[in-house]
Length: 96
Length: 515
Image (cartoon, rainbow over all chains, first blue to last red; front, side):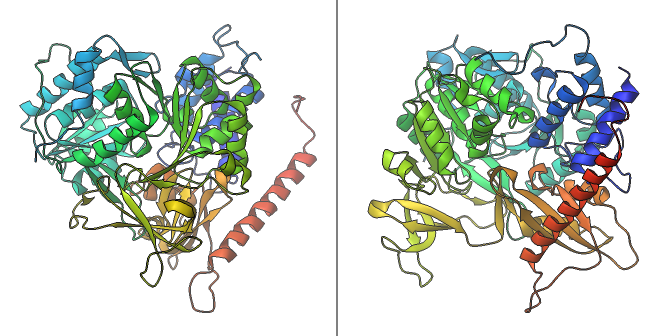
């Protein structure tokens, strides 16, 4: 997985899901997502679920913080770190 | 008179329970001894800068053990802290520091350069983390009952954020009530779900400190992650949970809370901030033997009424009552004609007593009962049902938001002629949507407007969507037709969803990915 590919995938998802397509192409890799309320805690959860389903990457809860989720560039870095084989391989649901 | 201070709680627990865990945050942990030392270090650093009694200190930070120690350090000097969300832009931190005349702004090392550039000159800027070689000699300034302990900025209906000033006695009246009512002891493990800028967090932190119990901080980014919330509740072996109903609803709906038996250690679940639909409360009651408590009170009064859920409450088809007065307060409902409402009647809830705020920062002190702006119905025996708001404030996931304030923030952009903000959806899906009319010849873009508003508003008050259009519908009397805007948004959303479905149907899965 390459940084740029992940950034593009994240941008596309954020544009479609949270910015009504962002017709004015205002979103950039460095847009402060949390500061501008584009991501709030609910939407962060939606994004994390998308990363798990679309990219097959489980983001570790310790990396879900304001610094790591401040913009697309830093989220992409978290996704790539988390995708390292064996980094996070547990099922999100706890065993019944 | 000299009274029981808020900071005395952690000081006493450091003596009684030095080795017990006071705070956990992620992988960080502080014992009461370590919290005590960290608080004293922080107090010495501020004192060395000349900061002391009556000063205000802004704490601009995500949740951390450092920021909790800093709170205690500030209080020990007789000064007051002003928490500020870490996600807020530096411009807002600077504006808030200017508004309350802060003597210092303290933040983590990552934000410190930006803070120093924007703020230095008017207030000292400090790293929240103290070097371990700083003096730990105890600092414990006596305070008067009505000395300021902290300021919580809330969204006001009049257009500007208001700093709610809470004194030591005010805070202690609430904390002491909560500790007694919930019978908090040193073995307890309290969850801290709410942000530190939100008054719900006061119970979590100080009820723990009062008893030598531990408080477990949940990062803001995980606050609505259902699976992680459920895991946190179990792994941290939480005994007392307190949050907005939205978080509990998510845990029930999407987090698999009910999939396993309730932890035996869980003995109280408290909720506040918005009505909890009764179905969720019934589900909780069927799952756990823990006490279920509905707490009520705006930031200005702290918790002034509460209700422990009864079987009869569960049998009703409406949210649990907000209950009867607590924390030593007196509450009553005032009818529009000024008389006190009786059973079966509705009126605005008024609160008087020790937990009512000192006043808003920069405004005359609060005198007499505080009118909450909430309409209630009187049940029997001084018990109240919540009915609704009397003004243009709304609640989104427990946060009170003044629509006028959000509208002013957008309206203050030079490219904006007029802005109107409405709430769409309800419950956990409630969201703010802004409708903006551009100034003549201007074409503002939605994100640029949001960026501008983010300098003026807390992040929870930022709309999740901004429509930029040419005109707003008006009612016969010239007011903006808000219900029509809600309908417009719903229609635009449906149109957009239709287009997206059409696009999705047209593209035949080009990458061959499984859907």
